[in-house]
Image (cartoon, rainbow, N blue to C red; front, side, top):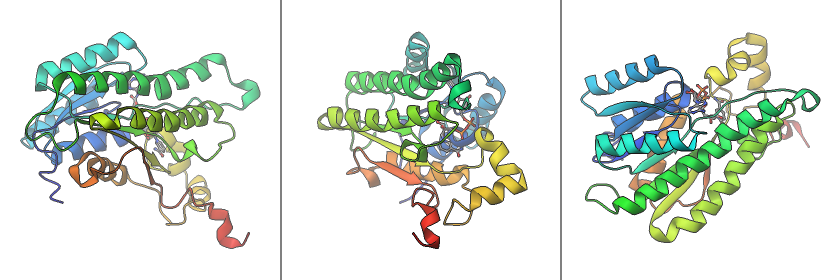
Length: 269
Ligand code: NAD
């Protein structure tokens, strides 16, 4: 696979792309030749900086502010994307938040915020993408599929996580939403898949990856012996969006260094 060309002539929209996994994924999509819509929620500066970086490297990119949990804002996000680049071929629904609390102390607003961004946001963006794929139809150069959707899930779609019930519920929801959507639209040529990252060093888990004692504790849960890098996920996203993955439909690709392999069983069951 020639990473420089696999997404040439395609348009990718990445949500939550002003930081972490989304930022790296947007950049990797651009390196693979796609024009990229860099969605951000509140941080305009890093989003604009990423756009400038992509443009300086000869690529095409646009930053668009939108709250993925807001129906009208998602509509405007897709309108801006189509206005700028004519179509959307790839959606990476990446935005996500954590608002952690033990269950007895979890507020309704913590619950609602996580479900609204991590699950409703994925629904609103995926629905807008499906509508756009149907409206625009196929175009030369935009790949074998009519369109591709990649949901950013988490290992916590399968691993229960005490103290994070809202987050685990949102990602468990993403799993069955993704597979249902994949089943529903596959016949139209729309490929829907997910990526489940393990522990990737970003702002969302800074406490667990930067403090040495917490890092060592975390490493015990990762058979491969290292914390993940945002590029580990970005490369997987480019592959999933490319024609090399054309027969991959309704699957979650775990990018987790083996975190979901019940690591404690290494020492005997
Ligand atoms: P991050 O905090 O850097 O990225 C999250 C992004 O989502 C941010 O850019 C933020 O601005 C954006 N966002 C938040 N609310 C939004 C909203 N309402 N509308 C639009 N954008 C919004 O953290 P990250 O680790 O890069 O997380 C990216 C995704 O990966 C999330 O869905 C997260 O659950 C998932 N994930 C991360 C890890 C990890 O270890 N880092 C592991 C598993 C899953």
